[in-house]
Length: 419
Image (cartoon, rainbow, N blue to C red):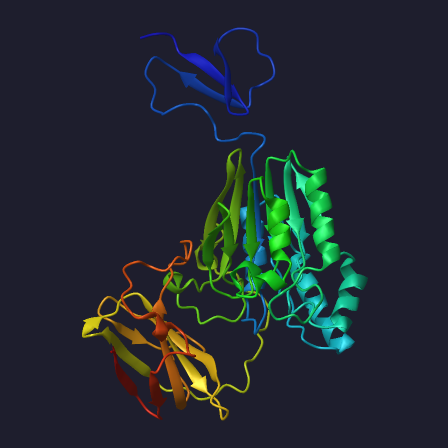
């Protein structure tokens, strides 16, 4: 048997093979005895100095649930990313009461102040819904959009509430000019990460938001976009780049799981040479070494004025054939007969569905509804309409669908045949 050698590895690169005997210098970072045959694949350690990890948290509010975001803070301290990004909706907001807003910010800052790494703020519509909130943000945090560069990666943290109160989201001309200037000054970075609150690219009115101008400025460089707001995870591909609409980190959600993109998560990002690698880490899967649940004092936001709901289930057919993987939506008709999206479900392989309004499978309130049936776009695909979806397009819109149902008190079952 050949004499054992010491393969000395520093920062993931094998530098030399030296005998165990001989003068002893500084101890190498990685030491292992290497022979002619060895029980490992290779010694190229996955620790390139240009690679790093950061985490992203999504919406906390819109009716935040107790002990979710505060628990995520403690879980981030277990994971130890280099820093944490947000995509907005940090406080409940939607108020002009300065005392109440200040208390909400104190609560939130009390949580993120426990992080052992930097936390980068991004405003959402709950954080900047009026001029009073805008003034308070400026007093507390200064800039509402900014950037930084880390290991030759540009991070653009933008404000989609500029000015506040635009339902589609909006970027002011001043902000667009700022983005152009920053991109021009950082033409040679290896990647660009863009984070803001509303996924304006998915809105029919995107041309009015100034996002297309920012996309034009981003053209020609590799970049990745992160947003939140919808509380439902979805991946889009635009201009050959990945755009992510994140789920929640404590915000209101029906919590129906991965098929619906409804879950509480932390996005763990590993920045590699050829771009970011994402891992969606569910909060329910992060425990300390003693396996004890993390308990915090964070109280949830009570949901008020909720209408009583009643079980609603059914099946969808088209000319007698079950319609699988369709999004069935019940749009409540108001006194003015204007439809408002209320409850939805994804059909199973046999066309069956169970509606949800506030929580998973809870049903729908009593009332008259317009029903739409549209192709369900998987959360991790680009959202293109499936070529195999055989339901006529008119049933996808409440303006053209002729389906009407009435939910009554008690259990409801509907057989919907699209003819």
